[in-house]
Length: 340
Image (cartoon, rainbow, N blue to C red; front, side, top):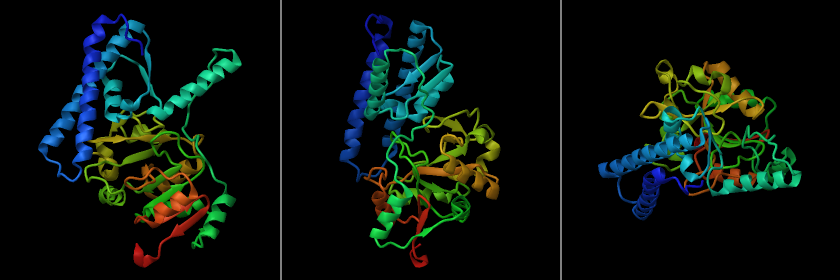
């Protein structure tokens, strides 16, 4: 973004840069003191930094809209992985439409580079690409997966009615490692390399944080059928990349306590059949059994490890964590009952 000549934005930019500098310092302190117990002052610092960030970015957005006189905003950069900030800008900002690039960190520059080269090669400025999903990573065929499972000498079975059987597992409060189709591009697990669970009981959030060895206060996020989103989350619309928070509707809060944060919000992912048909059908099957078109979706990894990419990654994560089952392609691996 070019700031030259925007004198009235200098103060906002200075505040933003100062905020980013302070955030980096706080992150360094946190990494150096991970063994220290969180105290009130830690929460106060984090809360204050979030408020300053929200106020500053909103001020910059208002300036940008006044200068450009456009009503749509496209955002990228690591700071816009902050879902609370994005929702603040959506609800209080001057733009009618906000789109956040799902690989918003440094890795996402590859997408911009690819689109630029495409424009040059076609010698055209016409735009036909619309990013409806982020399933752009590696995929593994059923044969490749089975070959690895056989080579590993692991007990597994092929599921004939995969969606129905996995939905039954989820209704039984079993926690599932879910490995299907192309991996997601970006830091969010969106149903290709996910850990899935039922949102019906509040204790599920603690169980998942224990599996991932995370702090107790960390929320887990819901995936909801796109056509059902507005019936469960206030003013919810299409949100396929899990980059905005929405208020859980009060009348629905007791039905999905595992995904409702302490402030009453949830960082939702919406899904439709065109984006990922198997994932969609699984949530639909869970809805048939429970009346709830929502699942818990968190990334398929444990603390300090990247999201799983290959069948080997998935199997290693499964056997080194207390997950109940691994559903990988059409195959399922389960642990002996005594180890659950």
